[in-house]
Amino acid sequence: MKTKIVLILMCVFIWAGNGFADSDLVLEGENSWLFHTPDDEKGDNNNLYILPRIGNNWDWSKQISFLNNGSISMRNSFGIHYDKYGFPGVSVTKYSDSETLGHPVFWMRNYGGSIDGITATKKNSLLGTLIFGGHDGKKGTQNGRITVKAIDDFKEDSLPVKMYFQLGGESCYAGYTRMTIDGETGNVGIGTENPGEYRLAVKGKIHTDEIVVETGWADYVFEDDYKLISLSEVETFIKKNKHLPEVPSEKEITKNGLSMSKMMEIQMKKIEELTLHLINMNKQNKEQNKRIVQLEKKLRMR
Image (cartoon, rainbow, N blue to C red; front, side, top):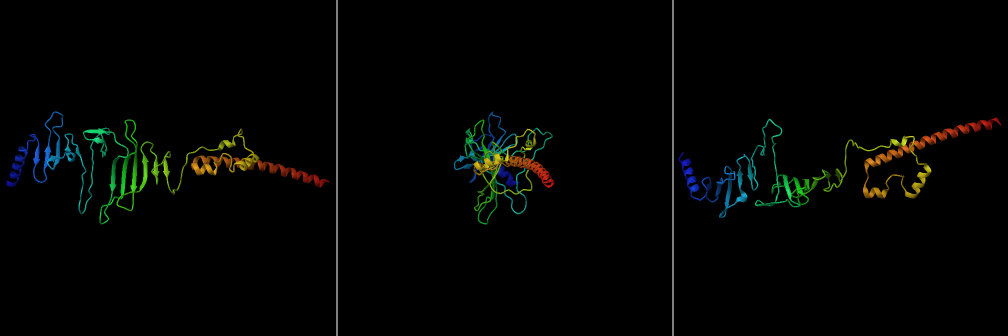
């Protein structure tokens, strides 16, 4: 009890003797701290700011703010350590009977400028990173990172960003980008950071049980008014161009790649055209066989 009274009296003496507002508390010593509540008319006089003394000055860049709306903000990083057993972590819980009254948020922001003069976020700024790591016995390691990066200067009508998923690497940093998502297009790159115009771009092999491709089809070939190109015309085209009509050349495929949906439609069209040619040839063969039988009968009658 005596110890508590002495500590309280010391705090009151220090508090009253440092020239701060009545609401401020100063903890002196080798590690000095200021507990500050502003006496002003800005509406934040119920807020509490805690900050350390660095040298002879209070360092407001390292303050912790407890706001009167229940929020807590920090100017620097914070750590959670837990020895032995347990699950150290951060939990955000919301209670509400309404779906429209907000939701739990973990918000990382990277502004340009300073606290006294905020400017637009600059190109190549990292807006936030989640890092997953361990220890190799000598140093801490970074084995996985999820990062959002500004790929150009931010403007009011343009907020270009990419999300990078990094995993693995031979050093302590997760240096291999395994997947990216373009914030403007939603296009995804796996094994490449530049998916370009493709919704999904993959550099490497893909193994799957099934692929469903939405494409057009070529049943119009069987319509009565379809003009079927003759085999002699096909032969002439092949001799001149070294590939089938309407089928991309090897040079085009090498340059532009293969459109699976378009190629499936073209191949089906060619199969159906070949089928029509076979049907016509079968009719011709039947007619010729019929004539041969008739000629044989005439020859036997002589």
